[in-house]
Image (cartoon, rainbow, N blue to C red; front, top):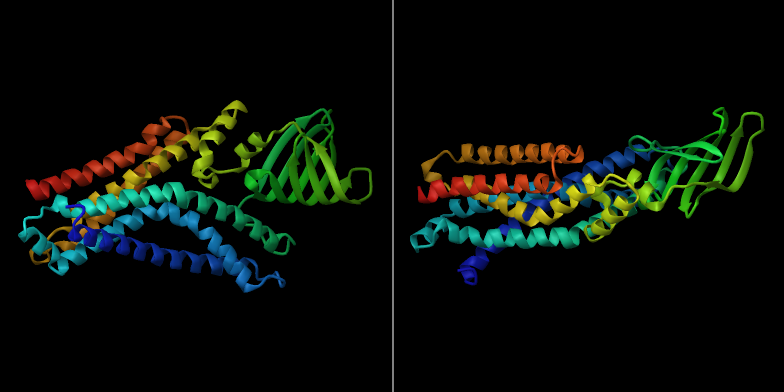
Length: 361
């Protein structure tokens, strides 16, 4: 059945419907993001609209990655409803093909799409997110436009005393910072000086600041092209403070988890992200089962609208469950493996049992 023309037809219809939903959400997100970036960059006269559009384009893939299960759910529902409305499923049933046979191509297509999303799309979206941060830095480096979100903070203690570093933006998972304000204290505790710098880069054993302005308690303002600040922080420790699990590519997650463990950083969030990426193909297949359970009803029987709303509600509840398990895992109250696979099992079994009841009684 899988290799027949009919199976390929059903698979193509499902893939096209899912891609259409994906493209529609992409257009919506990039439009809203572009308008927001243009509003924030309105005071920067040197930035072109095309450059802002490129920045918005690089920011969108990471957001779309989180919405991918819902794209598959809505795409599968629209595909099955269209096939049912055009009586194609009726003809398939009349020819002796069961519901399990004509949803199999969609299930296999969802597994393939999920595998590609994990192994190809995720690294690309992470790389584009890093590029968008660099482009945002070029837009807002002058300080005339506000930075998005709260600042990043680092606290370090060395033989020279305590140093508190505040950065407006982060690149390369914290290894490069821009829009900095540094507060230095003597080893005995009193405030020593405040430093403002345009950017800073972490090198082995030191921070290197560029375009620096130093404000001392008893000293006049001093401007320096570069300034070096000793540090005991390692690259793994800084990444643990600045990077988020979603911005680490799939292929780098295992090595990242190992290095974070060696440096004593918490790895629960990164382990959860790794297992979620491994479970993504099966989560998309579970969404297809949920969609099939609410979309295969004949139109002449009525009640299609209620079934569709129940499918959307089931997807929303599954999203709530995934967020709850994610928070429990990050708080180390649930194992990352269980937190990543529990929504997959609940969604898949719910769709399977509902479909089993409808088709086989």
